[in-house]
Amino acid sequence: MPETTPQPPPHPSWENGWAPDTSRAPGTRRLWLAGTLAIATIVACVTAIAVSRTTPDQASSAPPATDAHTDNGPGLLSFASPTTTGATAPAKDKSGMASTGPTASASAAASAHGTTPKASPTGAKPSKSSSSTGGSSGSGSSGGSSGSGGSGQQTSSARKSVRSVNYPDRYWHVSDGLVKLDAPRGSESREDSSFTVVKGLANSSCFSFKTADGRYLRHSNFILRAMSDDGSSLFKQDATFCARASSYSGAVMLESVNYPGRYLRHQNFQLKLDPYQNSDLYRADSAFRFVDPLD
Image (cartoon, rainbow, N blue to C red; front, side, top):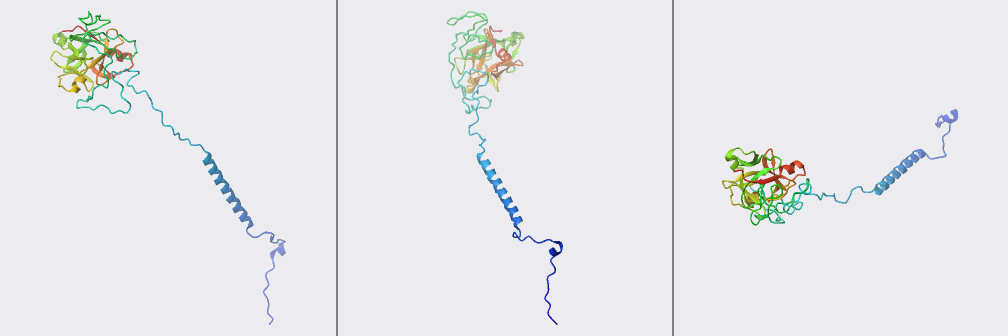
């Protein structure tokens, strides 16, 4: 039997007229697509890098500005040199008061006989000028300057009463160890509303107030109290107050010697030590006149 050679089936293109494209290699279209995608990716990366390198740095290398205004009140003049920013606060003992004294002395001394500081305009800062206490009436004692209750005051370690400016019928009064602003009631109340004004225990240019039974007025936890002298340096500072000019004629403001910038003022008729405030109410509450003793 003769051998038969297998023949490929007839090509369909001969039947339908289609012929394969032999002008290009197989897979060329895919290569073009892949190349285009690769080029687009490279262009995008290069563009992103160029943009990131040209963007300015928004962070500022300059330190934040600091507020140079560090006083306790608007324009307050302190008895002592102002504490530098960041300085360590004074150490405190059991009473809560600082154990260190003022950082500077008063610029002018007030002797046992002196003159009252001139009244400053309403809204002005308390003045550092020297001052002393005295009666509301009065002529000056020997060696001292004379003055009247409306314009001048003087003292010579005499007994005085301290009257409020905005409550003229009320006086400093020791009640249960605290100093309050009360109207006089009977002879005992009058005696507790009279004090011997002496040179300051911690600063002879300032004042201390001694009660009839030998105690002194001192601030403790910023509240004014009558307490016995324990001989400590802290007690002497707590019991010493410096007179400053008031905006009320014949009146003074009393600044703490160891807490410069804090003044005695009444609040709810309680005497306390408060930082200076630039307000009419504060200036009225912290203004006092020294008058003849009630006892």
